[in-house]
Length: 198
Image 1: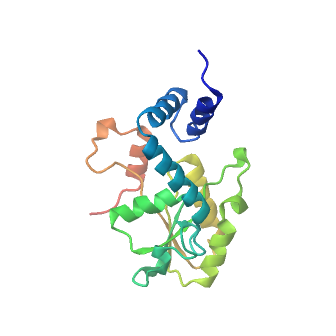
Image 2: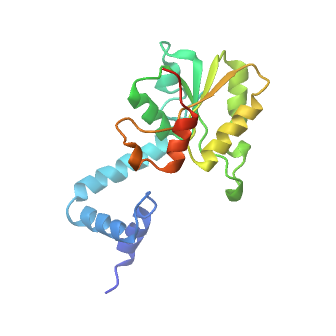
Image 3: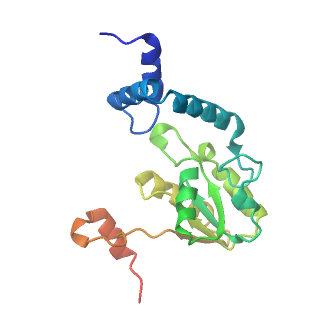
């Protein structure tokens, strides 16, 4: 049995979501069409409105409904600390810890020469401009601990080597509550190399 073209189009559209394969997209499509039509309409409206009304913060490049996001507009934040992350989701992750009160800069990705993504493609030039205009004491590089994230952090650090900025990198290692026997070798090696005195 072949599906109607419209159902197949919905299934194909749902596959754009991360982690959604053909079977998951098919289940979602039929669920929305058979059991959650009202919710599907709300989802469609909110998604359309979000795409139309969300833009990028002029200062940090995170997603925002206003020209300057709430974090950048908050005068109680420490503007001498600037945390560089890859995506707006990374900002949310750091904010949820409650342990950082500085400002952010969202690159919008990481360097990936194999994919043709260079420094200009991820806003490093905009970051360097912001650093020249803002009194930043410390730049915290919080890119992901992947090969590309490490390369991006290294590239930014190299660009700022003679600038006088304090540049730091987030620590990598054993998660809180983790047991050493279950930690992969690369993570354990980073944890040992990044040890600190007590």
